[in-house]
Length: 207
Image 1: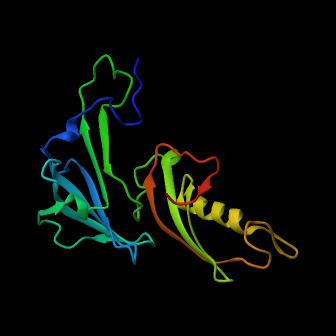
Image 2 (image 1 turned 90 degrees about the vertical axis):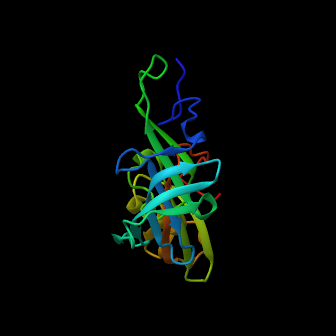
């Protein structure tokens, strides 16, 4: 039997043509990210037209890097947005099971665009969550990196262990920072679903 990638059907062309929602729940989610502050605004996708390059959305919520979620303004006003103005776009639909896909989910997910967003790990299986971090040491060195971890708290712990090591009588040992240096600021910039992790370690340079 042909085994499709996680949550996908092989050869599905549903998202290659204009599609519209038939229920209030929409056909997927979209998001924009403010680069300076990391504020993420999420939308429900009502209609998607790949040929014209436009998406019709309803604002849903806004979320900051601290995880504070608030209702988005104009939640009941439809907006038409160009694909280039979105940072993240994920569509989902139902498929009728057949012989080829009998052992797999009846949902089919299409990641049209994927970005690291605040709250981007929500609804994502723990084994596929990837977090992006920014870090500054007390010596003024800055780093940006990715971590594959089942939760943001565990990603923080991995980052501290990787860079700073473990506490010891003289300070810290086993880390990758220079002797005497330590972490001053460690910020999670967002998360995303990444089914395939091509790196040998849990931490990697950003793509």
